[in-house]
Length: 591
Image (tube, helix red, strand yellow):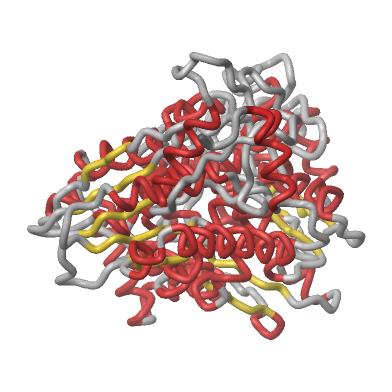
């Protein structure tokens, strides 16, 4: 950091509290995670970081303040990449691809989003996060962004035990911690792995692609003690290192002396112990003498001693309907289309009409989910696509009102984005919590044909929507749809809510899912997908309708599949209109 700021840059620390939440740290308790972030700031300050050109920004706060800009950018990133591509970034969480939760799929998407949200020119992160930084550069290609961020990756220290390509959080002896005592530092370094030659103690474990991605240069020796000398002791400009009665002024001299045998292992470790303790001592003194820092450390230490089952976080959710609201029947509109069909409109009306008398009918328009699913695309910007999505949804609602004005007069229309922006923090935390509770495979099972990350995000959003609309105490809630795919997502949501301890603790009852079967208005049997005359569209003019109905399949005596009869029954008579059949004179007239 000091090197970057000395060169004239402004260093922005993105305190990633939300990312810790997604990675299930501190039991998913955001308040506790924030205190850990404050602890890190205390450490960096005491260690000598030059704060004159450093800014600290808390991810949760900044994202909430600018929720519309941040999350639409994140959804745009998600819709442009496949699950297979984003899974390659999984090592930034220390996870292998096959063990990812759905929330951990969000991590690279959000980290990529951060770069553009912050307007960063240079991404300075560990080399273990290089893959997600490259994802950001690939996003530039897809989104037409000319100026790509520069990737500045720093070295990852070896763990102190043999075969550790980096420290292990589960093994406290694998690294030096900033609050370690002088005796603890000496003990850890005394037992540290310290080979003199590559074939004299080959590392066990690690290796392969993981090891290659953790380091910037090839290192056959893999000696963590020498690694500390090079990257910690000699990191400050003009630093020296004393060991075995010799003062070394550069790392290569230390390396050569140790490998040749001129510097013993005991002397190397003794010199390293003294150097590391000298660097850590100001931090120890800060936490011993600064009351606030001491309180933070004591609090966190106490939390870490708690059994994991005591770290359960409270229920976080968006409330799309106010407390005390009576029974509600929430209908999920299908993904928007620039060519909405009459059949889709009738299916929605059928869902709304199925509500019991006295229940509030809610029509839910999932515009942000539609962006994630890439339903309406082709605009120059994400904002253009969102406008097109909302226009398509407004068109659908307008047609519903024209088809059944009396019914629609009593329907509450809610747009997903507007509801989310009323409480974005709780909504997206509920998305993350749902993702933490499901494996990536379980979410993808809702639609095994979908390869895009956007589908994973949209499915998790469906769970959050169900929690926002369907959570109620002592009153009925039904989530209704006509699409089998939507039904699978909603059923996944209900299963999650039924097993959610925080949900039960809040005294909430899971909603019921109702699937109202649609009626086909296909005008032809086995029509090709590109056949423009295969179905009636809501925007069809009179000539279009006449042409399509004239070409519609209509076999004499076949009432099992007779499109004209289905259109008459469902669209004309079903919406309260009358039907008059006239015959031409040459066909016998109307007599």
